[in-house]
Length: 81
Image 1 (spheres, rainbow, N blue to C red):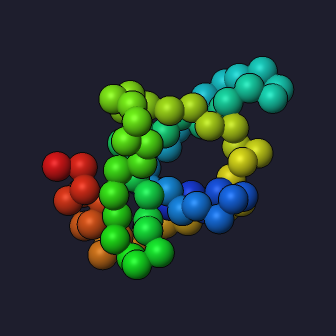
Image 2: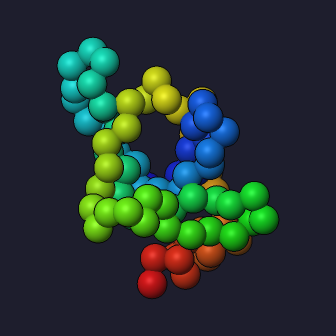
């Protein structure tokens, strides 16, 4: 499922998210096709320093998770092309 994740450092990500079993303190959220929602409303790929498509993140680093708007999903889909 595609969600917007607002991180504790105020970065807003949009990605496919899956919760995985993990030991306490270990990353427990698998993010796929991760993009960032920029301050101007545009969406671009996040972490252009790697070719990895999946990243692991600790849920403790997430402030909240929300449903993206139809417009944000359209921008996300375009950024992934």
